Structure formats: C-alpha cells, structure tokens
Image (tube, rainbow, N blue to C red):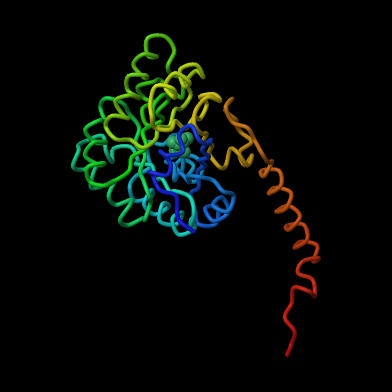
Length: 266
Ligand code: KIV
C-alpha cells in the first residue's frame, strides 16, 4: 500500500473531492486512516481540543512534534500534514526551514502547513527549495486572532481581493494545496477556479476541492460550542458519558468485574 504524497494531492485537482481530517494521537490516527481519508492533519487545534488552551497561540514545537510523531506511527495510507505552531516560522526564513524540516525528519510527516499570505512567501519558497511540501492557510488564521479581534469570518469587502491575490502568490511560491477557513463560499469558489492547486475548505462552502474538519467536532465530542460550519456525524460526548457512567455504577454495585473477566486459579 503506497502512502499518499503531495504530488498525488495536486494530481487530484478536478478529479475527486479530497478529504482531510485532524488527529492528534496514535489510536485516532489509526482509526481515521482506515476510513480512506486523503490527508490527516496534526492541527495546532491540538492546543484547544487536546490541551485545553483557549486558542492555538500557546502551542509550541515540542508539543506539535510529540503529537505528529504519534500520528505518523498510526497512519499508513494518508498523507500526514503537520501544522507549524505560532512563532515557529514567522520570525525568519532559516528558522522556518529548520523547524519545518524537523516535522519530516523527526516526526516523519509528509508535509507541513503554515498560515499567512504575502508575509510567508519567502518561507514557503525556502521550504519548497529544501524539499518540504507546504500547505498554505488563508482566511481565518487562528494564529492571527489578536489581529483579527477574535475568531471572525474573513474575506468580506476589501479583504476579498487581498485573499484572492495571496492565494495566487502561495500557489506561485510552491504550495501544493491551500486551506481556506471561514470565508464566503463565493470567494472560495473564485479562488478554487483561479489556482491549479487543490483548495481545502473549512467553513468555506461546497466549491472547494476538498474539506477538512477537526475530528473532535465531527465526532460530537464537544457539547459546549459548535461553530456553524461543523456537522456532527456522531454524538460521542453523550456516548462516552453514558459508557463511563455505566462503568462507574457497575463498579460501585459490584456487577463489574464479573466472573467472565477474572482469571482462573490454574
Ligand atoms: O489546526 C487545525 O486543526 C487547522 C484546521 C482547522 C484547518 O488548522
């Protein structure tokens, strides 16, 4: 079984819809990889969904590498894309290339993802030059929420043209695909039609070349808040609470463990 590569992803443009999903650990990575997804993203959303931070800014290289290694061990077929955390690439080109290289060398990811437009073009070019496939990320960029004033829809009004032009720049710089987050569907469609690399949408409507969702959202593991763009395909939060409560009650009542769960004397 050959593992999917960045060139395979580029070749898929206009042939099939691409499926990307996040995973943060070995067991989830193994499960999603058996579902014929094309790409598994070790997103820095890790900071929020697995580590309990209120945004992605506190996540560092140490955490991302640690989780990317675990995910890579579980994935045999899909392309593993590792998200580069805040300040691992913004502060300079050589630092960006060295950090990106660690995801391929130490974590065995097949590609990295970085957020940003014009300001990260030198980093994208240098990474690609160094043999590192790069996914771009435009629209709502969670690492820039301090500038955006929160998790807000992007690409309305004047910023529409800027995002379109940045998408073209990222393609030219060598990105092999582009995540578009929280922008109007009409803008996502215009970008998708005007570049030759696949677009992967999250809150960007149906016209992208593919879609990505955070696994915890898709499985319904968070009942506090559900963004508009999330579809819950399961209600794991309720199922987990039911299962653990049943276990607790059986332990307390002595029903568990039963004789079938015990070893024989000899
Ligand atoms: O960190 C992440 O999970 C992401 C996706 C939402 C695209 O960047």
